[in-house]
Amino acid sequence: MNSFRDRLGCYVLPGGVPDSRPVVTQAVAAESLGLGSVWIGERYDTKDLPSLAGALSQVTDRVSIGAAVTSPGLRHPMVLASMGQTLQSLTEGRFRLGLGRSASWRWRAYGAPSPTLASLRDVAQVLKRLWAGETVEYRGPLGTFPALRLAQRADVAPPPLLLAAVGPRTVELAGEAYDGVILHPFLTPEAVARTASSARTACERAGRDPERFVVYAAVVVAPDATEEGRRRAVAARAAGYFQVDGLGDALVEANGWDPEALIAYRRQPALVALGGRPADKALGREELADLARHLPEGWLASSSATGDSASCASRLRDFVAAGADELILHGTTADGLGSLVAAVGEDQ
Image (cartoon, rainbow, N blue to C red; front, side, top):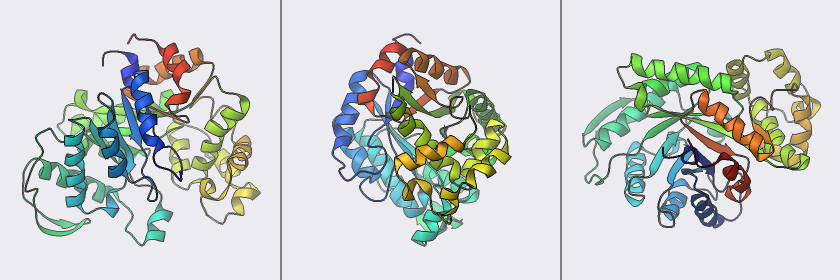
């Protein structure tokens, strides 16, 4: 890393969008700001990962292009392997493939198996063997594959393979089998420190070099935002995340917060009325932001970066000091990050 800016990345085309084309201008703007990476959160509608990443490979020259994240369950291992090395070739080595579980309701609705620790471990091993030029015979939770082989290998190194994680077992799996871990938004710097240490310990225990393992912390930011802007960027996102069974619980446990407060939040009538449907799909941004008022005071302030740009920049340095190698800025695209990047400065 040449500067602190190189440690920073941002999402492109965040949230649900009817038009995919702004991904190009957003990525170009991020590169012009001097950010080190741009990230795509795949959705199965207008945000197809390989389509977007392929487009960005041709309009950027320096930034890394990352998937944060896609699920391995909807693509055959051969398709994932081909996609990964093709994008790595198109970007001349700038692609990063991040995998994750997503939400269990999605896989029930799609009629697809939900990713497990076993399947996430196996897909990492299969992909790495394919990218190493091996012929892979496999029978396990991914399926039965008599002979997988990439007939043509890319003339660049394979893409780093990352795992999105919150819970301790998934964090340990990232250290054991992946090249890096992507940490969920709304972890405090203290939780990032504990989680990074756990992942690197698992990495070392597996006989791998922990110095080569990369910790990516996603941080929701709202620099120089109005109160309304902060509510939409930070509070509304938190309201959706903490409602989700499993995810909200894992965030509370990782941060050492009171689980009874989470139970009380989920008893809010507006959430109970959803009958288990995801709040961020069923409610508007203002409704979500209003719900966040029922989360304990201090939860969001301690796990995000808000205030003026100087305060946000200082907060980001706290996350890096805690053990994050790189930060994925969430909550705004590059066009809203100019003042924050200026406040960060050029130094390390």
